[in-house]
Length: 196
View 1 (cartoon, helix red, strand yellow):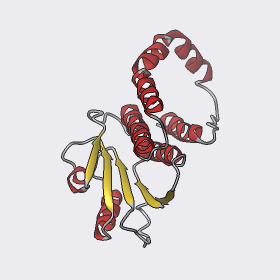
View 2: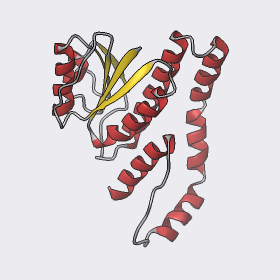
View 3: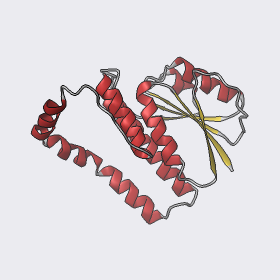
View 4: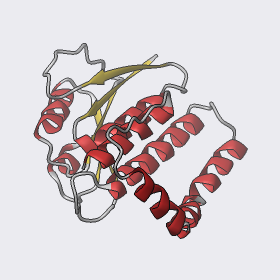
C-alpha cells in the first residue's frame, strides 16, 4: 500500500485540493491523508509516500514548510504551482506547472481551473500506470479533457441568460452552495467567488 500525503493551503488551492482528494480516492491501494500546513503536525512519513503541494504562487509559507518537512523525512514531493521559479517549484522533486498566468484577484478562476486540470491529468495518469484503467479508457479520458475549452466557450456564449440570472439573484440576502463528493469542491470555489 502506498501512502499519499496531500498538502494544501491557499484559499484558491483549497477547492482544487478537495478535488484532488476526491479524484485520488478512486485509486486502489492508496492511503489518503490530509495535512494542513498551518498546523505543523508530526506525521509518520513513509519513504514510499508522495507529498503533493498545491499552491498558486509557489511561495505560501506553511505549504513550503510542509514541503521541507516531507523532504527531511525522505518523502518524494510534487508541486502543483503556477509560478515558474517559485520556491516550491525549485525545492520540490517534481513540478507540474499550471501556467495560468499572473494572478489578478484573490479568487482567481484561472488558477483554480488549471489546478483542476492538473489534478485530473495526474489522476488519469496514476490510474493508467497502476493498471486501473485500460489504454482505451485513458485515451477517452484525455479526449474528454481536451473538449473542455469548447464547453467553456459554449457556456460563455449564453451571456444574456447568465446576466439575467445574476441580476435576478443580486439582492439575495443569503446564498447557499450545497453539494457532496466532487461537487463539494465546486461549491467551495463558488462560495469563494461569491464572497470576493
